[in-house]
Length: 226
Ligand SMILES: Nc1ncnc2c1ncn2[C@@H]1O[C@H](COP(=O)(O)OP(=O)(O)OP(=O)(O)O)[C@@H](O)[C@H]1O
Ligand SMILES: [Mg+2]
Image 1 (cartoon, rainbow, N blue to C red):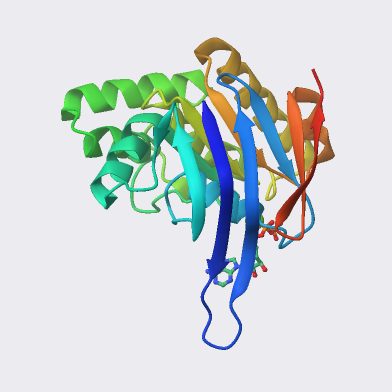
Image 2 (tube, rainbow, N blue to C red):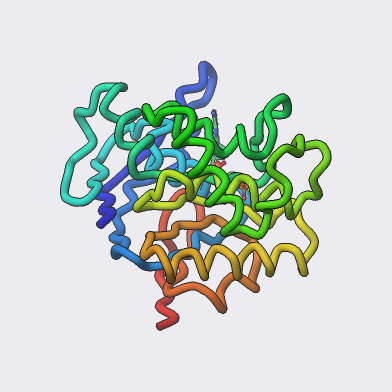
């Protein structure tokens, strides 16, 4: 479903450019759970940002369901993201002046759902993460684990094909982190979505199909778990 073909990324800095990815090639099967692991600075977030279209590769190609994204215009990436890609992050990235329900409804409104439909779907997505009773709460009134649940509901509300997660448990204690992993794994099973997650958490391995170990901007090895 996702194919990377010799994808390279160089951040052009005036004095010394940073090579964040050196010709990475990989395939991620539809419905699979893949972990990206490796030391800080090895290129995990860079890779996720390229797959999510938040940044563009310097070289190589990324295919999404057979469609090459290399020559995509900005609006084509935006359309793909709004339709098919959900993202969650270490620091949740909720908008502080919107309620939980409004945060979750926002991507639905952006893709053109009407207000009533967006509110309804946001409520359903929050129900699925066990926060149906906290619709009107501001992010600041929620715990870290609850904020991440809202972020998962926001990513999940559009029914994406692909969920990208950048250290989603990195800012949570280990028990809460494990609950979030279980929630993601169960959402995957019921919805059939593909999950690509960067993590430093060894606990995540028990939920994953494969681990891509990265080192120095390259894939070091791929470990298949099932
Ligand atoms: N916008 C940027 N400009 C310049 N260099 C960058 C930029 N973003 C990332 N880098 C560099 O690219 C390399 C890869 O960074 P990246 O954030 O992908 O690593 P990471 O594996 O996610 O690390 P961590 O585990 O700490 O999150 C690092 O050397 C980093 O300093
Ligand atoms: Mg990172």
